[in-house]
Image (cartoon, rainbow, N blue to C red; front, side):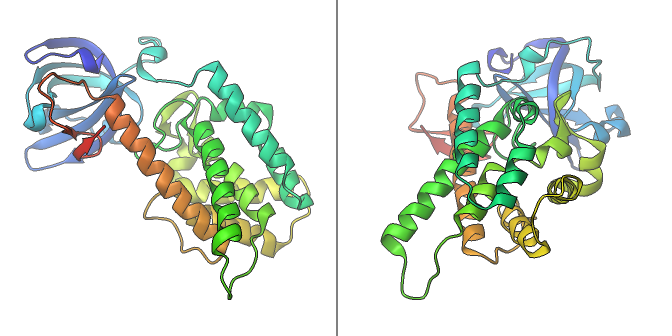
Length: 314
């Protein structure tokens, strides 16, 4: 486990998830993780294989030496690395996941909120996509590969928590801050976009390798996967939604993607969801940084988080 590594330790046949690759003049820096935390690995250029670039999110087998770095955070000096065969490791050692109780809780939240959608077309779309099979898939994949909810079930937790937060923000806005020049909120639109806000990961990645992009994910990106899934579901199931209603839903969904690739929101519902997703993502990443920090007796109130690349406080 990463949180048990000590300076000077030699690692042989160590299995870790490779979450990212950064090239520099000196070589490559790999972002590696297991369920206990994250660590950077330094790889010389002559040891780098081009096939690794297409395997970001997959599991690698490596030999390395643990050495110190700035901020008292260890890093790996990698001596050898190769793509791991799925039969060589136990996924439970690498992918932290939700408990059955949490999965049941989040599934219940999404089912209740889906039942509250009044628009028949939006409700049918949500029910068609949030089948029991798809909910279990959301419980086995992260919400994103390099941002927030980077654990098995992060997609399900994100969908449920963001839905509750967006609903409550909308309620409080209407109740307290609805000014002279505003219109009411389309509750069917914001609820549908909220319960489906991570549904694109079902095309973007797969439960078999939950931290690796699918071929479609590589081709289209997350936003493209989300749009294709929504449009295909509407057409194949004869869901009673007009082109304008589908376009409004897609605008809210794609404007709420927690990345710079998101589009500008054109509706109040999109603005609410976009900022709720950003807030939830920031809180989730801070929680992860605190949870994976190995506290020491001489710790100052603030400590360096390698995942956030800044000092944080618990």
